[in-house]
Image (cartoon, rainbow, N blue to C red; front, side, top):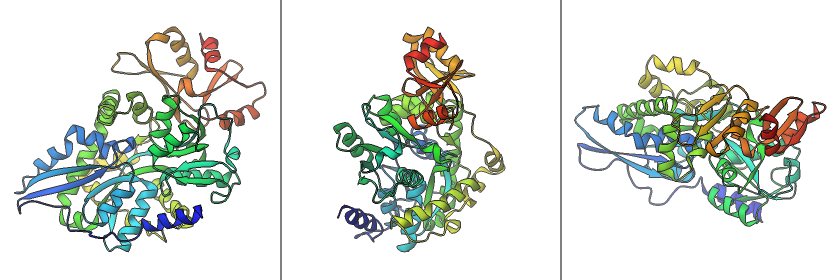
Amino acid sequence: MKRTAVALSAVALLLPLSGCGGSAEAGSSNTVTVTVGYQSKTINTVTAGTLLRSLGSFEQQLNALHDGHTYKVNWQDYATGAPITAQMTAGKIDIGSMGDFPLLINAARGKQLGRPTRLVSVTGYNLRGGLNTVVTAPDSKLDSLEDLRGKKVSTSIGSAADGTLVRALQRAGIDPDKGIEKLNQQPAVGASALSAGSTDALSQFVAWPGLLAFQGKAKALYDGAELDLPTFHGVTAREDFAKKRPAVLEAFLKAQAEATDHLHDHPVAAAEKVAKATGLPAEVVYLYNGAHGIATFDPAIRPKLVTALKKDVAILKSAKLTGDVDVDSFVDDRYVRKALGPDYADRLASTPAPAASEVWPKGATETRTFKSPAELLGYVAKHKDGIRAAYVPDATTGTLWFADKAVWVADGAELLPFVAPATAKAYIAGHEGARVITYAGALERAS
């Protein structure tokens, strides 16, 4: 019965809305209102949402058009991508940002309802899949995905985090439909359920896993980067809007590039700005959006991401959330190529910053980078009262995590951090003499 209810609710996402209304544009013939749907707390979309809005870059680009129109921007904030898709297919949102799985649902629904949309740029991505994480309660006895068999797991069906959960369970030999009891919940509801003990684990996207870990309300069970499959968020636009207002869409993409450059040039200040706008701790924002954060930001639509999107279709089809999706026709990089000009090729050829250990000292406007996790620990041990946050990359996947929340392994003189217990155990199995130690023990060894 529960699986039937989930399937029906998923199918309902694809049904036409009543009272779809008209265009998102409003006002007099000389005034154009552009409506942008974004997810403020999904912080790897900030260059097309929260940060972009706070910088005022889009409004500045629109004012520079000088085409006889007065432009107004209507920013609409949502918790997930589903309502943005609903409003886009109703003609009420012109430009939206969301994760890779919601993007595919957006493409499918737009085609079904005769209001096609196009993927026009990328926001934040991780080439291994580290943006999604499965977490459990701090005192949970669960150590691996295999332990989830028969357990209750909260996720948002149709989201990228759900896709990570499905793939991870399949690799662990667990039927994602029958092997667990999946709860279809909004991220905030799932987080509350985990704290209340009414679910055994939570699979969610940025920034929920990092936030709950930072608050001491959860610990990592599975690092999505173990899948080694790209995951990303992107910008989608209604096809009719893009054709009618190409200069406006290009202005948005230019502004997105400006916001991206600002984030790269001022990562700490950008984290503080996003934190102020969202209410999220700046330390959590920096975990994902920092100089060596889990997310890499760039508007270029990389072939690797398009290939990953095509692989995602099968997951959504198996969940009966979509039928076939023509990804090649959905992806349209013409606008971003024109907006960025020669710079587009350079961005396309760029590579993510290498993983690194970082400390954010209290009161500092810049972080300090260390050559190894052991060096970071040595610094932290000497400045315990002066540390705002310390970050280390997983020794296997490279996923950044809080140093005091990581699973630490001592291997001779080496001190190695891991996001989840399973990856630490896998390392130990291949390295005789290596063993798990506490964070306090790691600090003592490094001091």
